Length: 279
Image (cartoon, rainbow, N blue to C red; front, side, top):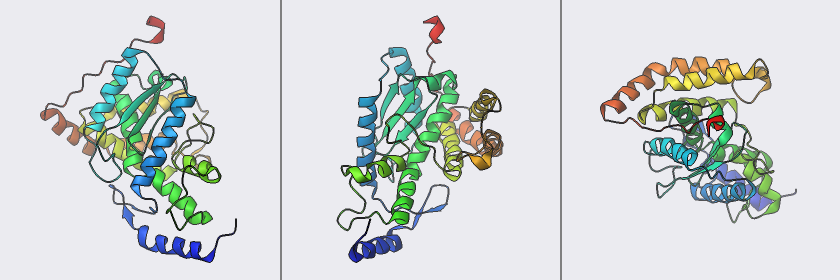
């Protein structure tokens, strides 16, 4: 695609004036897209996911997931990439794949298959803290911004291509972590995954969940992989063993946050639904 010189000039200007951003962990990142535009993209992608997927109707499962999600949401810092009204939509999808995700605009999705792996409230809190962390850390924005910078896909009139333009739709939903074939969740980079692990563990501790459950979750993931996971250098995700060691290293700080949360009366009473075989 050939771009006009004026568009390239705007792209260069935005790279110079909009790239300076810092995550809550202190890392510098490239952020070109306005948060309001990211919210618009996230809301549209989530609507497509709901239309193409099967929303779970089981009341016990929905109540449980909402209980854990609400506890995490209560400690999410306001402002920045958080929803401007502070409200998050939580949807459980009847899907056996062990996945969960969060999108800009305050959208959280959990597959029922995730509950077969994250079997305790604390383990689910580790998952949701991690996914919400991706949004708060602007990882989707950063990935999409890198795509914009690399491909010079930028319009002078809109900062980034509108989600309504079909030629840009795949790049946009891919930047958000959602595949063009709706329901396919794309992995973030190792750097993003590790950063979301750290922030997610912090969120769950501040919400009153034992942060050691994050370690247990990934120990279970390691056992479940049974040697099937690719080596770390072949994967965009950190190796399970690497995540475990990193979460163990950050555990003392997280435990202190957990202690303070419990001293303030934070003790979420979220009861997992009975296993499918007992329903």
